[in-house]
Length: 213
Image (tube, rainbow, N blue to C red):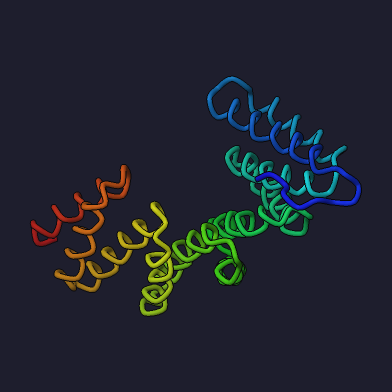
């Protein structure tokens, strides 16, 4: 997520260096080469001293870290800081992550509004992820047709994860509706995708269909 447009203050390279340091620290944390305390300290140092764009970039990553640590109030705060910040490319992903957090806290209307907003943004990956998550939220509320319509957006995106995940969810919806053939077709398409996670789940659902669930 490097900054490509030029700015009058000549800070393009500085932004890139700071954001690269965050990516390196994130990868080190994920692979066990940096503790979460060290990673958190690095992000907070960027937020305290860097330019507004890099602050937004760091806030989005700090939101993820806080969420992973179960510190939900702090995660919400930093996601909102990222959404309000100056780093455009993290705003939609941060809004999607915030929506997922809010669903877990029962704030469904807020989550739905955020996801619908992200679906309108020019970030195709974030829009696909938002559509997948919104489809699940609507399905859980019994708003089946709305869920199916939204999930089609995720499928049409062609995203290797979100499109297949949305197809799996459609299969589960059809299964609940006792529409066996529709469910089977969806699950077979997921299995055929060979997705490392969703294809295994789809195979299990196909086994249930074979047993007459």
